[in-house]
Amino acid sequence: MRSFYNYTYFYMPKVLGFDVCRGKIVCCLLDKRPQKVSKYYLENNKYYHIENNQSGVELLKVLSPDFAVGEPTGIKYLKFWEKWLAKIGCEVSLIPNQALPSYRQFLGLPDKDDEADALALACYWFDYSDNPRKFVSRKDSDINVLRELIFRRIFHEESATKYINVVHQDLGYEFPEVSTVKSPRRILKSPAVFWRWLADPEIELSRYDDLYADSCGFGLSVFTEFNADIVCRLGEHCKIIEQQIDRILLKNKFTEYIEVFEEFGFGLPHQAILLSQLYPLERFYGPDGKPEVIYSVGKNSGKLTKKPLSLRRVRKILGVAPTRDWSGGKRRHKKGGSDLCRLSLWQWSFVRIEPERSRLKNEVGDYLHGIYLSEKQSGKPIAKVRRKVWAKAVEIMFNKLVDALR
Image 1 (cartoon, rainbow, N blue to C red):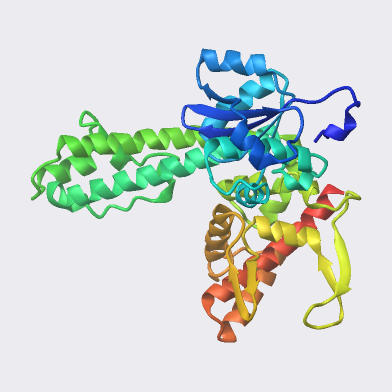
Image 2 (image 1 turned 45 degrees about the horizontal axis):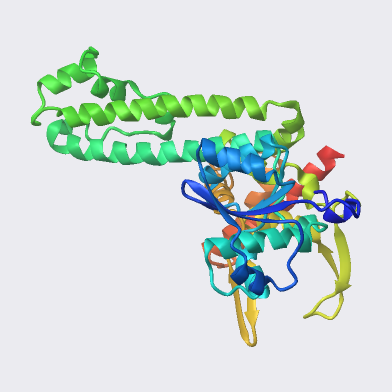
């Protein structure tokens, strides 16, 4: 990230704070940070409401900011303006969602509105432009595409599940003989013949044609045909999405990551989710470009303790390390990090680590399965056992990635 302090004395950069709304952005343009921000907020009337249309784009070109600061909320709305700002040569930075409310209070702007947010975002750049950790790290362009594909895939999966459930319920009285036909998850990769038969009455399939001819049900409705067709179409969409995900994962820059993920038996969707959070791993390192480890006296033990900070950052972002929320005598922890990663790790451990029959059969799988058994036999709650397995798995994965990327 470039800093204001890198510029010569004679050049004052124009900084645009922009708050994304539906169909527009509310902006505040500054060339210096106001000394009294709350007073500036009350007296300044130069806030721009720029709509998502040609006139709005032209106004943005006229303002011609050097830097722009926003929040990563309303990603779909944000994307339009991110692309246009980049097109006119403006560097866009985003701040963490939780940072703005407290910073706005710090500036003396307790009341929240779009103009106050825009002003605070512009001021944020002047205060913290020389500290990259105060901003959301900018992701690789392939990773941005990968994240979009992941969320599209999840949306189609969830939509298909709803339609599948509706069809099964309707078949209970329309064609009860097949109402309990299983719908495996792979239906979205290639819809089963049964669903294609339901969707298209012209398809002849003796197995189901004969059953239907002798059925005691009341006949398939047009709604079942329509819903089954939607399930098949969602399956085709998911197939296209997975092909695009696969093409991204095959790129050379991701080779070491994918090789490590495959050691753990992660499938394509889980690989994509983990990669979207971990790449590049170097962003979790210290200032010297290496995994950051410090030694300090423990608060409770009073002894010299090793603290692997880079590993802690990775655990946090993957959702396997709780966020501490201590106050006085109250001791509690909250979930933090990516819910999607945490769900992926649960699905993976449930299928590849816990069961004896289908578990991962290699050194990593044996070790983690051993931890799972010993922790479970000690009488610990299963949720706590799983968290221990996830944390250990992430530690092993981090160390393997560090070695692979050297």
